[in-house]
Image (cartoon, rainbow, N blue to C red; front, side, top):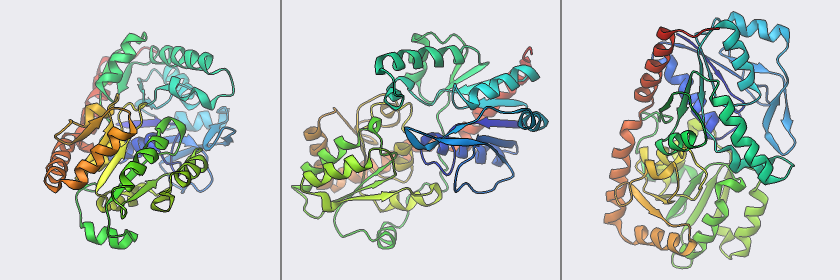
Length: 381
């Protein structure tokens, strides 16, 4: 089977969608299929015969995001000659629209993974936020209703999509995790290699952007640092909010123990999970929370704000702790785990166990079966 993965977010841009696309590409190849990524051209992107790069410019409000130019006749012919069986899009705009036009012209199935709560990202568009949020929901819903199949990474999102008017078939298929790579390892060796101190290490992995609620985590860490003077908080990722977050950490008096690591390529990220004592997460805008699942696969206890997406991955008291969006309550949960080695060990084992059904090959095989079902039924051009 030949699958085209059309995405506006891809390596070297770091983030959940980029990780999801790369994981799916690798999984499809592992399962014996041919996967081609179609993505914006970006500085620092590695040459890859299985990645078609579309000319693009950096987005004014988010330079890491490439805005692809409209696809011209030459590139359209090239994409047509790929002879794709499935057009699988990751966004309802830009290259998503390109894929839809090609799929419809060729009579091939169009699959759309709804990765993002688009209304929660309205602040990136320089227009009135309520207007942008309403239009984002309407636009993404209209696009979903032109797809042959909509993929939701969580059951909660699937219910939301139906409520907002998506009438096309929806299947819940989370992004999988490579369990051979993301697994418990030598904690002491990982800490020594990364230069972690002797005290507890709290870890966050993800973009440093407003919608990720990282400022909340810094506030909560202040309540941890006051009781644990040797504790450190490492943030792995980059984003538009980093400068503001650095200032926030400095004002709280524990800034020297908050380390901004920067972007780390996905192949290297497992070492940070293996070095951590706890993984902390506070985003309330997730459709899945892939970094949470990666941490769980490595056997790291999770403390997270109870919210959509994440609460389907973490079972409170079994694979982590889910708490209200209150920095004092969050800090107390972290302190509880740091003080109770037995509870931390129980949650670590529960986290790894809970992550096993999310094996990338298992979920990839489910997706392949859905692709085959579409091909068997046929799609009218």
